[in-house]
Amino acid sequence: MDDLAVSHNHWLVLASLCVALIAGFTGLSLTRGLSERTDNQKKLSVAFASVALGGGIWSMHFVAMLGMQLPMAFHYDAAITLASALVAILVVGVALLMLHFYPRTRFTLTLAGVTVGLGIVAMHYIGMAGLQMARAVYSPIGVVLAGLASCGLNVAAVAIAYGQRSQRNILIGTLCFGVAVVSVHFIAMAGTRFVAESNPLAVGPQLSNDIMALGVILTSFVLCGAFLLSGVTFLSPGPASIAAQEPIATPAPEAEGAPAQIEEQAVSAVRQIPYEEDGKTWFVDVQEVVAVRAEGHHTQLYTGAGKRHCIWSITEAEKRLTPSPLMKAHRSYLVNPDHVRGFERQKDSAVCYFETPGLTRVPVSRSRLSDVRAALGV
Image (cartoon, rainbow, N blue to C red; front, side, top):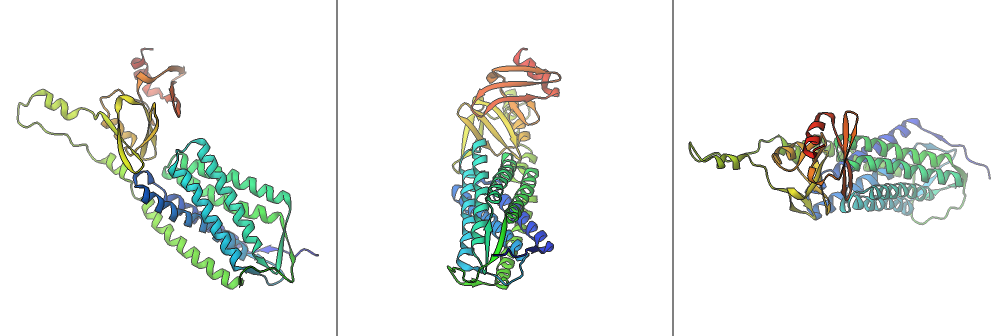
């Protein structure tokens, strides 16, 4: 059976990339700052983000398919096409649940990226199975390359976007996600040929290209609306950055000539640091904190019990915790010298070593080197 000649509308190929980027930005932005919300709010946001990302993957695929031109009319099976969309949404939802309800270790980030990558590949081939009148025939090497590219690119996208939840990383992660989705589609298509099929096996009613175009347009319209809403939220300052800009109120002496200890209490640092876990705010004694690391507008607290999420920015943490056992070692780190287990000088900088879960070393910048050495007595 002769292969059918295939060509593509380049404008629709470009449109498919735009849809993937819009979906990526919307999904990644909707899940920003979830650590400050309750479990129910987290679940609702993850559900919306799953629909945005999964629906965007599906829309991108069929925008590109609308741009595919064959020398014959072809249709889509409605049931299989719907199944491809549901698979994309479900798999992305599983990955987001991993990222927002489990510690974000290197293993978790990799597993979530691989899950999204396999979901994109599954959506693509399920969607292609719904093609009627023209049957897709795949080469094994094309399927393998599509799977490897999808997993690799999506692991990179997730690692960047969730390794540090800053605006810059979300934008770079969005770009990686968009490139991943489009690349996987066309790598898979490069390993696919089409042959005419006179008696296709239909599962559900048939959809023409016109009906499919209408569905894709409606889906893209909803994505664009969510994109605009996410963009406004993305550009607005988060609660942590606002808090960092507000002056910290201190109680004034009751009268002129008030005892010196009242003034001392007014400027004393807090002795407990708040952190968020299971939708509640908990507190840890500052003496138990090994180090504080900046993560976007928030920080991570490292203790002997593990890593905790704090909504303070690194600037606010330094301000509130002065004076305290913690001292600034780097623009992104506060450290407790009492917990340092090793020190290594490296030309104009240094490294402090720790024996704490999730924290083995902290860089010491040149400007802080003398203070850290004095505190350590080296």
